[in-house]
Image 1 (tube, helix red, strand yellow):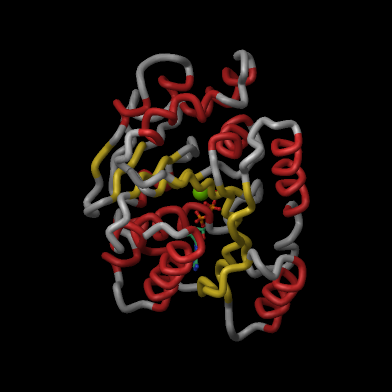
Image 2 (image 1 turned 90 degrees about the vertical axis):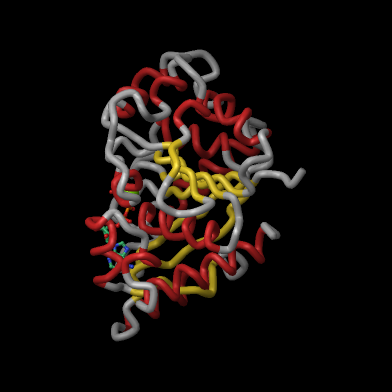
Length: 260
Ligand SMILES: Nc1ncnc2c1ncn2[C@@H]1O[C@H](COP(=O)(O)OP(=O)(O)OP(=O)(O)O)[C@@H](O)[C@H]1O
Ligand SMILES: [Mg+2]
């Protein structure tokens, strides 16, 4: 039985392309026949609506995180073959507070995902995190094998990178998730016309040469329009630059993590 790799897509900074990457990377993997589960762990539920799925009370990991029901009960098919979603809902915001009061509060997500990880049904599980290093994001770091960080090609992009990497080191050295690796850095909203975009990419390359993905996600209006139609970039505009980029990123991820 092939193993399952759990990726968390995190950055405490808001609006840096986490959800756009989670949704389109998940779709790119599914397109390459890799059975993929996307987990929307953000109470904003942007990944859920980007896939054209209505937020529904009682359909998220909120219940399972409080010990009510199993994560498997939340599996929701999407319009994309090979891509399953666990949606989010606003109530998940309460989990930020409630989780902190439970025992073993960092391991709750890992525990409830264990049956899905072991089911053999998914080769890749992607978790879309909220813009904070709160309980939900910290739980995702504890549940994941690999952290993917999205960085916007803008001034101050690297701000906060140290903080999340220090958290990874802490979780590893405290043996809370000894196997967690920084899987890669995805540069988003790259604008080839500006020197700034290029400088930011060069800076990240200099610091983390083995981690930065070669594929740069361009700034593209089509990428920002697709979610309002409940579509991935592949369904919304298959020939757009954003579509080509996320397909290329998918191929890089498959190769880097040996997903095939
Ligand atoms: N490559 C891109 N080109 C143009 N717009 C983009 C691109 N990637 C994301 N966007 C837009 O930028 C905004 C923020 O992107 P996204 O929602 O993916 O970021 P996020 O990190 O998930 O945000 P949050 O922290 O609120 O969860 C959205 O309106 C999205 O449509
Ligand atoms: Mg988001």
